[in-house]
Length: 522
Image 1 (tube, one colour):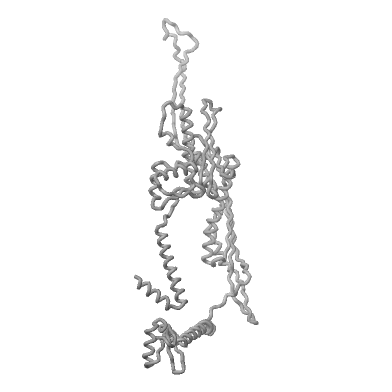
Image 2 (tube, one colour):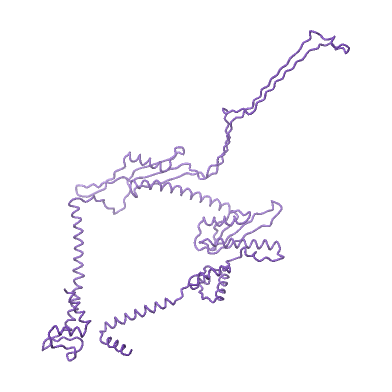
């Protein structure tokens, strides 16, 4: 073992200072690398177990971790807890089994333990607390919401309808980032649907900065309705614009057409009830025939004797006959009842304006200057483009839609360059060989100003090493490798080949560097 260190010391003693520095730096890098690997492999990586906890929940989680003797770190001012990565998922499962973290407020677990003798008032109060807690937990599931609190006002029941009051609710949100209006509306409807007899207009949503997100007032409802109508109108216009512009750009080119669409919509709700009668479509519903016939004989003014009534009859007496016939027919007229509800956002008129850029040609003047000449679209092309636009927009003459398609020159940006015609013949040949010449010139400059000075520097270094190795004295050539003229390194005898072999055996590294230098020169 001692000899090993002696050999290392001898090797270091023979090395020049520059090589000692290089070896020391290499050893330092290797040792640092191994030390870093060892530290990294033994380092415990912590992952977030929970974040955004309330002080109560954080206290319960930390207490449980201390009982389990698991190391932890508190983050974000105590609202976050981190544990070793290898125990992260097991802890989440065990914490969930124990109902941790419970979150702000209580839920329906309050009814897991029932107590005898609980009054009706306490039952109602517990139900209200549980409902508030469950709604808050549900709202916290939204990504943009950090924390939520729900308060519900449940008025007392009354037997009189006039004295009954509807419930109301308020929601306080602590947000991570801005909440879109659509999600605010979703929270309002979520709360309203979870409470009996609660309507969305009686739900108020406020953020932690005191900003009212939804007040439930009629003005707020009108504003939301107006915003939704405007959004629908703009979305319809964008859809029609995209359909028309994408079709035209495939024909005239990218950026050579501008399309604008304006739509008029009717957002009023209209219910139309119609009852139509068709007199030509008569149908016999019922028919009734009545026929009457009666005979009446005139006996005259004399009275009839009770002894012989037939003796007093007048043989010339008159007999009256009466006959009546009624025919009643009831007809049912064809009737159609129609009820129509017009949808909201019905398009009443659609206006489309499209501007197309023309074509350009390059003209060369007598003095050699070039200019662009604008050529408008032909009437046949404009008629075809107008037809395409009408088909894409869904043109309707009944709505009195308007379409305008014009061809106009577009304004060019400053510094535009003329389009060069395709090179042919001599021009193409000059362009190709010109590129090759520029590449060769660049290579030559790199060789003259970079490669050649580098070779010259290397050659000077090699010549200096050779001069140090081969030194002349009065007796001839003295070749020395390490040591002075009186040492073992002085070689005077033998042929040049023998002296060279001895030199190589004495200092292999230096001899190898000299040979590499010679090879580099060649």
